[in-house]
Length: 105
Image 1 (cartoon, one colour):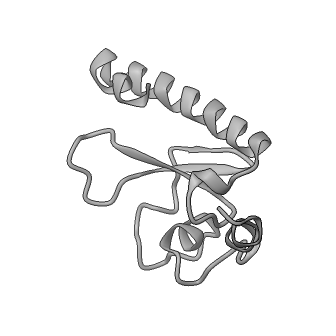
Image 2 (tube, helix red, strand yellow):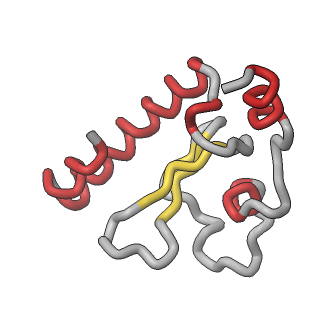
């Protein structure tokens, strides 16, 4: 990917009014009851139940900063994402057993 394009995608908007996850992360989601109580929060990420989940326990790990996708995160932030993923896996294992936590490998 062209470096200038990657930089513009990564830094264009730390927050986007059009992004539902940005609105939830900033507590600007009054129209979405239940999503103001994340399952897990860190300084960089919040974890929420998926809207319309097909499987009980299905959650989304969302960065607080707006990114178009994980590939544009810097290595340090991505490492913290992997730490949160491990925490979520542990919580899912506690709540649902091996079957659910296997999906986070």
